[in-house]
Length: 276
Image 1 (spheres, rainbow, N blue to C red):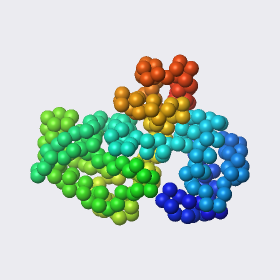
Image 2 (tube, rainbow, N blue to C red; image 1 turned 45 degrees about the vertical axis):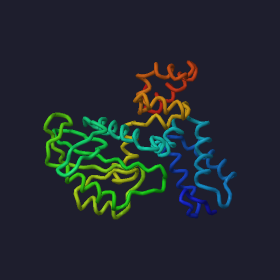
Image 3 (cartoon, rainbow, N blue to C red; image 1 turned 135 degrees about the vertical axis):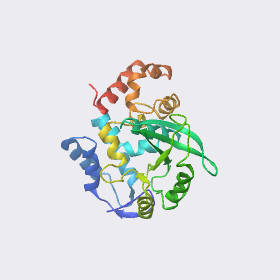
Image 4 (cartoon, rainbow, N blue to C red; image 1 turned 60 degrees about the vertical axis):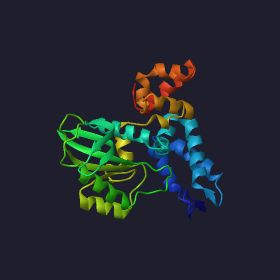
């Protein structure tokens, strides 16, 4: 059976891939088998992968909202757009969870010109800059022009004093982080130039998706018990992570979430982040 991807490409339907993604969400084998059987009855020649995903998500949500939230992770990262402002905040929190300190939304003077820097991180007195490349579309990859451009900015900023964490900080390393993927040329150029890359599936053993699962650092956008409007209001109030809701319950009340729904939100967050 042929299916249509987001890009418009027509490919063979791979039920094994769908099953693996459902199992990765934490759903048990019995639930996954039931979902796969129900989807098998509804798929047809030329169906879009987007529709298959929605079918799977809706069915999984009936079994377990926390598992559905994990299954929704990549879409949830895309919901940190459309400009990427909240994505930058999210990436800063991700590095903070790994023992860094971080500053966001900086303007630093280079040797030649000034530069807006998305994030600066520091660990063991080693300071690095992070440039976030957010793509609203799922099929837009970061090509070789991205690391070429960012390398020139890094070279203009490094070895100069900047007031970031103290008055005289030197930036010694550079990361490029994207919510999608890098092309092979982009990876080759960045590796050759000493730039660190982080994308949805790169590097293979410590990709963005793997780091999120390992740290339980899920964005609140993956939650199934909140509306899009409620998620936006929370992010504007600087609540970016699902677990941050547990220390900002008063904000749920302020944005109009009912007491009954607040209990459901707390339950989903607690199970998603494995809090008891």
